[in-house]
Image 1 (tube, helix red, strand yellow):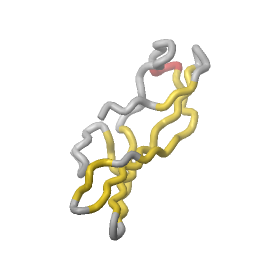
Image 2 (spheres, rainbow, N blue to C red):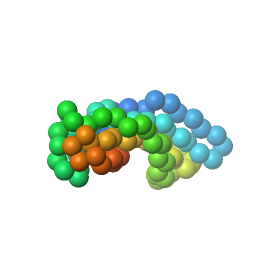
Image 3 (cartoon, helix red, strand yellow):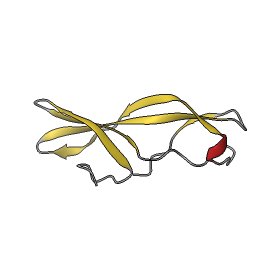
Length: 88
């Protein structure tokens, strides 16, 4: 378990200033299935990463910004690209 109580994520780094808490994190596992055609993990390849920021409820009187480093995946079967799904 991590500081944000999200078991599917691992926190890589934490930064804070006077007003904000930033948690840089990524998923523990890669997506097993293509959402477009249903192909399993063997035919999916990493196609880069995309950092997304979400705003969460305040903690310790500061705004909380989880930064999620998501895999961008490419399916070899249907040639589509997609971001890994976030379970939490």
